[in-house]
Image (cartoon, rainbow, N blue to C red; front, side, top):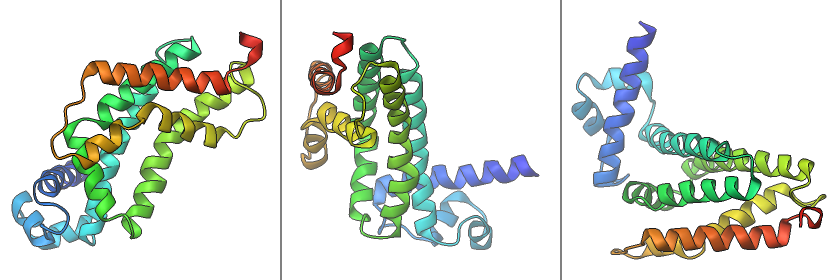
Length: 203
């Protein structure tokens, strides 16, 4: 029974994900989700009390995938600069994918609400705390300067590797970002980060 319950919940989230991406948050209803999934509204409400709850789970599913991909990239090498570059490349390729751009646009529209808070705390922040843990470890090992604010440093890394690519993808209806542009953004972003935060002891 437990497995069946889990499968049904995942089915609802998967169906809702496609509907949100196609019609937007305001373009769908619990009725439509129930109809598309199949079964009664009562069944749907037994899993989720309202549309906002389903939307949050849809976004968090994407965030969980990103967190998993980040973890693999951060474990890909013992060399800290290489590790950061592998992570940055994984991050940008994922964030610039058409599906993820669409999800981010939906979140921004709904940002000034409990949805935004939940997505930030359970999605965005949780993902980047994984990166902060690596930065904390690098400080302990002497790869980065001591006494830095590790969360601020993590956000600086984010800003440097994303540069203007994220804004371009979010604001332009037609955009084409090449693998070369992504690689260049990764190389420059990580190098600038290490120039400022890198430990002189390692030079």
